[in-house]
Length: 89
Image (tube, rainbow, N blue to C red; front, side, top):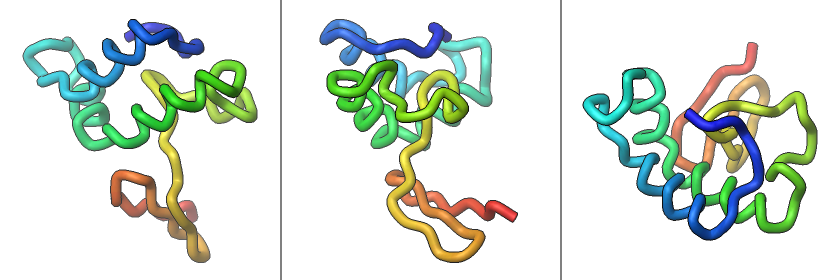
């Protein structure tokens, strides 16, 4: 896992291919599952890095290997761009 930083075009291809990484290609089953479930977030992070320093608007939102992107929220629930729902409270 590389540190969070802005990507160049080569890194973008690497990030997107890593998003499909199987547990056999990484020593972290958690990271492999995260990458397989959050491909759209990986794509949006790569796009954000082209126009926003580090691809984030606030440093406390840093999440490796890349942050989640929310599509909508209602009360304590939020849905990410990949369709998963999370409860905040």
